[in-house]
Image: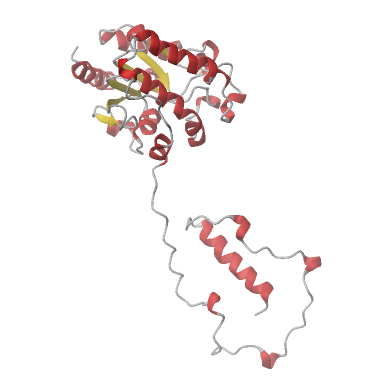
Length: 295
């Protein structure tokens, strides 16, 4: 078998494995067939010189009627765990003792000097303005959504519009005012058409959220909607299965504390499915938070 045919067979096998999801094959390492004008013209060998069926093929091209054994897939890795573990949190252990003015100063500096001018991912290209977050720098309770929507992008504030109004009612029903809690999103720029943030965008922006949490150090975080819960908790489980159950956010450790997390439905989802059952579930989640905070 001439070298050109060997290359074609090898390329077909590797591409087949690649398309079936067996490992990751950089395209740059695949043998490239030369252009037609560059292919050497080789005369066909005499018929009697072709290998007979009993002649073994080269070892790299052993073929049989059995399908090739699948290549072992690499062990699954946790993208979110990797994301949080890459972020260094300065002075996380000492942030709890900072005054409210000192914490607010740290948050304001991050917003002004870093977030408002951030160009770390493509979300910056279509934004009107960044949406950093707002509320008390010493809040015991923090709400985290996935990303800003159209109203938030225009106003530069998290959770405004109809969804924000419903969140305000939820906060008031818990016995708080909006200024008593802290509200933020995983990403600080609006994704196009309000889609779920992509992992590259979360990786670029996640450090800001983690530093906000490290500065504020709330006792409880309420994640709003499935994407925010999955990103914060490194899980693929749907919101209907994990809401109402306590989870732990440990990304601040060992310098900082563990933080209790309660996932619940997003206010925008409630507006779309404003049923008695859904409202009852959300109120049950919020009552559990009130109890955990000792209110």
